Image 1 (cartoon, rainbow, N blue to C red):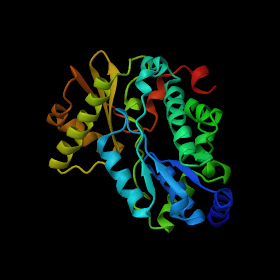
Image 2 (image 1 turned 45 degrees about the vertical axis):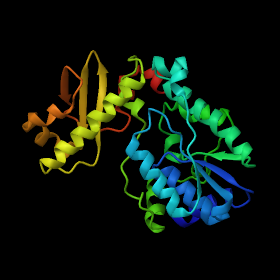
Image 3 (image 1 turned 180 degrees about the horizontal axis):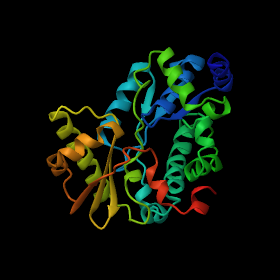
Length: 277
């Protein structure tokens, strides 16, 4: 099954004269980038990583290292999603404004480079995941998703990354910093920096205490309340060592979510008609 889907992925990319890959630094867009190099050669592929306050500094550095390992040109254009009122307002459709900004920046960049196709790392599972306004916004602006067209699921993507020996194969999900801020709490550069600093400090504190964490989020729930999510197996250890939460600075109260880390957990706070439309 994987072989067939990889063949379908290659068939989507091979006919293109060139392609610009919106590379976030994650495994999905990383596999698209690697597949494009395999299909077209490095000289016909450009990676573009958007730089803004919503991108953690560590992610930017890791993205640059990965692109360099493939020998691909790496563009790092600045995006200004914070200039979009809908993004700052942080209602349930925030991701639509973010993706609109991204594609509105990448499309003219691709045109200047003589490239007609802008592609993203959306996979087949993403299309079935319910409320994903960002995917729709990107598609409406002409960007398309080779993984989804080839029917590749998240498991397929990780299997392909392992098959090709990519260092991203087992990388945990790393959504943008705005995903840490509860819907309805306005997004600002200061708020994004606060959650980034809190996560970095808490990860260091856990390591110093001998706790190896894979998934970690510090969620800004509003009213100066932070909610910490870690791997479910680590929750009892973190609860038993309350001094670790001192690392989460800038909030009046810090709670540990007893359910542990859940990707997209902020969507649980949306009313059902919005979440699944």
